[in-house]
Length: 472
Image: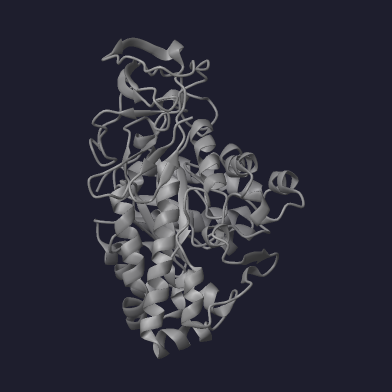
């Protein structure tokens, strides 16, 4: 089977076969070169086994619904030496699902198309599909939505009984190597809660683990480094992940794009937060080793975070090329820095990651914990800024202005209270937004393990019922 390389990254995209029953009249046929007979077609994955001619970016015609019109798609060759063909694909739509939201036809889903660009680095163009006009992606673009979209950080995992049954005794780093299991764990909260986006089941240290850096995730502790960074020579062990390193991740994303009816969010760790894990050897309360290097050896520090920016960029490029519709950059530990130190030692590397995401053509969410003093700095290069529960949402919107969307920001601990309290707190968040477009409802951090799933089910229903973003 042929392999397509994208730009300098060497992303390997496996061709897919076309469901000829879906195709209409063939356009611009080319003579097939000698070679083994093609196997029976097995189905079309939009954006993976096909590519649109002159596909618009995700910003194009953002304010208009995307009609399910016939589409001219380029079907990639199924074998080396076998040319592709232009075919007219007629995407049919099925009726609205009666459960929680209209569910678009699987053939009309959002897709990410990776292609070689003149600049040398693979660029990604979003195909305009039904999911491109989903309420989550519209809110990320600051556009009006029929309801306020909602998803939860750590929605896939610890609080769900079905998660524990499916994962069993498998460690997290073992689980992320199994695409079928990742697909199931990612879809569980979408099925249960009816959220407006899925977030890939993974961890921010997976790219480091995939390159053999030496990482473990200890239950009740978090990521632990086998050999923490202590000197310049240790940086030689850092490299961006390639397609082989991330093959299980991209396989899971491809499967999810086929099966989900909501956009999929990919993510990566911000350079500062990854650097803290590498230097401290694990989670830290005071980040003393991190600050000692940052302030005592600035050249070494900048070398470290630039290398980690390369790691994050490569991870996100592979995720988007496989089909992620949006990405989130997590800077979990940035709140330990003063505003001046954040601007000098952390922000430049994160902005380079966000600039790379902008070239991929998908919305970027920038989230940090305890970063209320640097919201304006975090907004540079981001489409959406995640707000934790410490900052009132209306104050955050006033500071950021209308040019950037916001995400948040219910206190995760509020979900442990009686339902009447949860409902009141959620309504306060919606009231603080005051119906302005560009709001994605979320918690101010991840779902706590003790959270009752029934509470989150009711919370999603409340946000969908009472949240509106009719216009500026």
